[in-house]
Image (tube, rainbow, N blue to C red):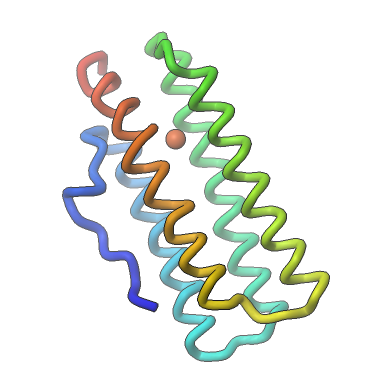
Length: 133
Ligand SMILES: [Fe+2]
């Protein structure tokens, strides 16, 4: 599986959000690399934990910006965040319970999990914030 390479396509035009997204991509790439090199399920779950924790933190960052700048779509955006966290936690639970390695399918799923939200909901938020900030 190829790494996700940062490019302007992923930029939401707000530096502090782009910075967080870059960090998340880096952790995703670490996970991807760990799968390729055959790290243990425990190790993979730990990288996933890092990715989830960083995402939770990042989502609160975005949610604070939405509040500060009176973003109208905040309810829907927050709901999407909650759903994303739940799906990642479920995947982590499966991996830990079944003591199974992260599969290529999981990686493809996580890649989509990460990029689709950036390319849709975060783009809308970014274009709003870049006018307000
Ligand atoms: Fe978001």
